[in-house]
Each structure stands twice: as C-alpha cells, then as structure tokens.
Length: 428
Length: 125
Image 1: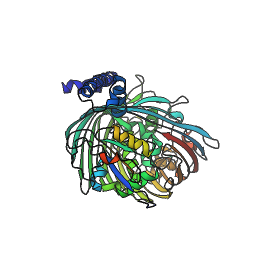
Image 2 (image 1 turned 30 degrees about the horizontal axis):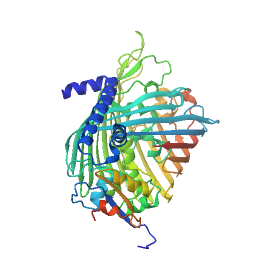
Image 3 (image 1 turned 90 degrees about the horizontal axis):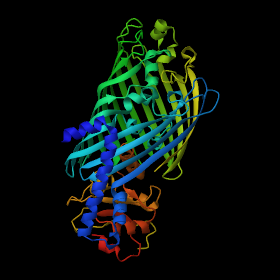
Image 4 (image 1 turned 45 degrees about the vertical axis):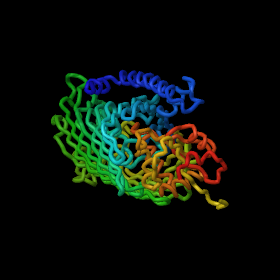
C-alpha cells in the first residue's frame, strides 16, 4: 500500500494534489465529528467555523516576492545590465502545507522566476517542491521520516531557500551557489530520508536525497559546451545529495557537511549531433560553518567539486577538472533591522589551472573564464518583518560564473568589472 | 509590577493540566517547532507576535535565550522548503490572549502586567 502510494506520488504529481485535497475533506469531516462529541468550545459549533478552524490550524499558505535592479560594467547579469539598467530578476513563490495527521503532511510550492536570458523575457513557472512527509518515528528527542515527490536538495547553507530573497544576506548568493548550476542542484524527483535529534548540546539533522535531478537547462548546457549552436538536451540520471548538520542550542553556531553525486547524460538533438555520447558526473562536498550572534555574524563555506566530462572525444578529450569555491562573510547588525554584510569570495574552475593559462593555451579563450574572485558590500534594511530592501556593490575579478546566455560573445567577456544592485522583497 | 521593562509570562492553554517545564531548552524546542506535540500526543499550537514587537524580542531573549533573527532563520527554512509550519503570528497582545483562550493545547506569551483575571486559568505557574 505504502509502496503504491510512493509510486503514485513520484510519478504523478497531479495525483498528489488530488490526494492532498481529498485528505483535507476527510480530515475536515473527522474533526467535525470530534468536536461534536466533545463540545469544549461552544462558539466553534457550526460546521463552517469548524472548517475555518481546520483551515487556520492545519493548512498554511506562505509566499515570497522579490524584484532586483542591476547596473554593471563589463559583463551582463540578469539581462542587459552592462552600461544600462536591468530589472531582470523577479522571484515569486507561493506554497501551501497541510498537516493531515500527526505523522503525515503534504507541501507544495510553485515558483515563478524571471532571471535574464536563462528564462526569457516572460520568465518561467515551475513546481519548486511537492511531496508527502511521513514521520515513522517521533519522540521528544528524535524524529525520523520519509519525504517523497520533488524535494529540495540540502546543499550548503542557502541552496534549499536560494530563491527566497529574505533568507540570505546579500542579493547575489556566494559564488559556490552560482546560477549556472542552479537547476541541477535545486531539487530532485525521488525521495528523502531524514532524521533529527534534539539533545542538550544542540540539534543534529541528517538528510539523504535520492532521485533524478533536473539537468534539462540551457544555462548548464552552455556552461558545459561553450557552444551556442548545441541542439540536444541534458538529462538527469539517478543522483544523490546528503547533508549532516549540527546547530548549537539556540542557533549560535551551525556546522554542516553536504555531499552531492550527480549524473547527467545527453539526448542528441539530431542524428549528426557531435555531442552524442556526452556524459557528465559531478562529485562535490561543501563544508559550512556559521557563527550567528546578536549583532555580529560570520559565515564560511568551502567546496570542492570533481567534474567528469566524457564521451565527446571528437570535440575535446575527456577531462576531470576539480573546481574549488570558498568565501568568508561577515555581518553586523547596526540596528535590529539594519544589517551590513562584507564578503570575500573565490572560485576556480580547475585547481590545476588556477590562472586559466593552460585553458587559454588550449582553447584560445580568455584565461579569466576559469576563475572569479569578488568583494561584496551590502546593506539590508528590514522595513517591517514582511518588507525588505537592500543595496549591494561588487567588485569582480574574473568571469567564470557569468551567464553564458546573457553574455553570448564569450571572447569579449570582461575580466575586471563592477555590479551595482538593488532589491525589494516581500514575504508572508 | 511597575518595572519599566516588559515582564514576560509564558501562557499555556493546558487542557489536561499536565506538568510542563519552562526551562529554556524546552521552550526553545517548542518555539523552534522541533517539539511538535505535548506528551499526551496533542499538537502544540504556537502563537507569536511579529519579529519587530518589543514583547517578542523580550520573550525570545529572556525565555528562550536566543535572538529573534535566529528563530526566524529556523522558521524560514521550514516555511520555504515545506518541511514544517512556522508558528501563527498574531498582531497584538490582546489577540494573543484571545487565541490562547480559544485554542486547546496552545502556547504563547503575554506581558505580565496585562490586567486579565482569566489568564491565571491558563497559566500553570
């Protein structure tokens, strides 16, 4: 029975929604009966108020919205921002969660996102997550369970909520979360096993995701091939993401170790497609640490990624570059609702070719496509708990993480450039 | 009772009159939504004031020994990954009191100086 249920949810997200609403109706009736038998609250006697009560207490709606403005020199970000102004980043999400039973809940989030050329002028709507959550063990200290459907990937501190502006301190996420690999690492269709342990020294949590990642993404394809004429599509193969996290009591310190293994294949666009046979494998880990005090906060993350590109020896030999990302970020709360952030960020595409010299010799393309280092200064003002505005300046050296779709003329990408950004965000 | 600072009281609509510890560890687990059920298995209904409310700030510091932004980080992660539901936010102390009175197995906090004899019925301290 359970297996069939899991199968249904994984394969038919539409069925999942029906199940969700069906169980709402069942539960509403259930609660109705309970209250009739046990009329504790006289004012809650009508079925309408009962339904309203269930609605309020077990179903929650939340959402978020953000809009950014960008002005840059040298390279484009989120549309045509170079020596111009782009309003090319819009994020809008709405979610509903339903606690059907003490050990069973459902959650769905829809996302609309417009992010420069990667989504086009009209943006893209997607199902961000949709899953059931079944808790099979629950005590005051330990909770274990299973989530099935589309689940977010626990990778580093910010990946799970990367599209929710108010959950990260700066407009641009650190380079390790760069947008070109966003689609791949965002979520997977499959399942998650989780375990949480609350102890007197803090909280431990473990998550293991297994399933298919979404690799059908033009930005990723462009980053892999450097070829605007490529006609096929990337396809996710069974992959896993896992994270072990610790948070001290109260959340003053947090440490997390995440590991991901992603497999991607290529579906040719036509019979003569030169990329036929392309196989990609990514193995990466990220170590995340955070101090989160009353006024001062400090975050550092370090990641290594082993990339395997194989199967297109007619175009280029198989290669296994190792990418490295790290950053240190300090925050200070001038007031409870006014925070300044400073970050130094570094990324290299291949630790054996940090300067990009070998890459330049082999391809003739600029060496600075192989690294990016930047300094970020940001100021965030939470006007109310719901509304936030922030401003940011970045001095960037290198162009490894710029969008290939927003900057199609690859040899002309600038090495040293600036980003000025503003963002307004709302959440509920 | 004329202390200028807020005097925070945790209030509970404790239908079964069960023993309940107000140790920071226990309250933290409840308000972080990690402990989700009372010992009798009933779901804990948690009510809070907005992050910017002076009483919320006082409550989080005094009773949880945390800062509001730390709590917000935990709630946000649940809210926007679908892995949990954050507490219900009410707009005022009066609304908090009303909600706690109406909801069985609920928990919240008020300013001790609020003049309402009924509170004692819900406060097991």
